[in-house]
Length: 331
Image 1 (cartoon, rainbow, N blue to C red):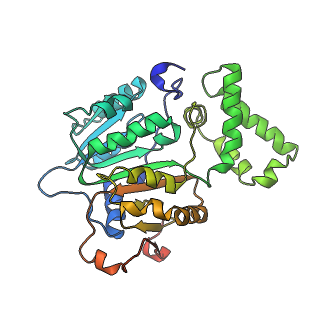
Image 2 (image 1 turned 180 degrees about the horizontal axis):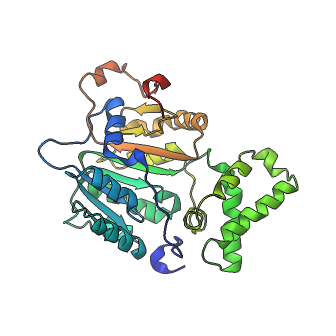
Image 3 (image 1 turned 30 degrees about the horizontal axis):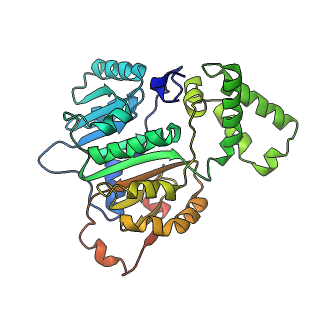
C-alpha cells in the first residue's frame, strides 16, 4: 500500500452512485422539520462541498439539478478527480469543480480560494480512515462550514453492521497473506463463507444476518468490494461517539440531527452540543433500536426556528419524534 493512500485501497477506482440524502433540498427538509433554519441565504448562491467525492457522479447530478449553486468536490485519488472533471466537462457543467487534495494538508492549511460552504457532506469516508485522518477531517469542517451551515456524514454503524465483521476480517486476512490487489480477496472470502453455510456452521445461528448480507454482496460490482472491505482501516461507529466528536467543534455543532432514510424516519433531538456526551447511553440505546448498518447524521450551526425553543420543556435533553408513514407518501 503506497504512503500517499494512508492505507486506503487504491488498486481500483470506487463505484458510482447517487444518494438522495445528500441533496440540498433533502437536507433543508431535515433541518426544517427538526426545528432549525435551513442554511440557504437570500441574495447569493448556496455553496456545497463534498469531502471524498469519489468519481464525482453524485456531485455532478446535484450541480445539474441546482444550476444556481456552486459545488466543489475534493478527493485524494487522482483517478477519481480525473474522471469527475471529465464528467463535468462532458455534461457542460460550469458550477462544479474537482480538486485533488489530502485531508492532512487541508487541515493544516485550508486554501483561501475554497472559502466556506453552506453544506459540507461526507459519504462513508470516515469508516475507512485512521484516527489521525478522522481528526483532520473534523478540522476541515471547522475551516469549511459557513455560519448557519449544515454538515452531513454517513458511516458504517454499530450495531447494525456487525454481521459484516466476519466477511471483512477474512477478506483482509486473505489480502495480507496473499498480497493480492483487486477484488479477489473479497470474492474468496465470500466463497469461504458459502462453504461455512453449506456445512451449517454455528456462526449463522449467532449472526443470522451474515448470510443475507453475503448474498447481497454477490450482486455488487468488484470496485465496491475493494473499497468497502479491503482497506487497512475499517471502522464501525456508535452514533454517540460520532456526535461527541462533532461536539468538540463548537463552530459546527450547536445541534445535531439524524438524517434518515424515508422508510425509517426517526429524529433524536439534542438541543445543545454540550449535551451530546451527557446523553450517550440513551443515544446508544436508540441506536440499538434503529440498528441500521449505515447511519446518516448531521450537525448544524443554525439557530432554532422561532417558536421551536419555547416548545421544548426546560431541562429537555433529547426528544424523539416519529412521523406517520402516511405523511411521507409512497416510496
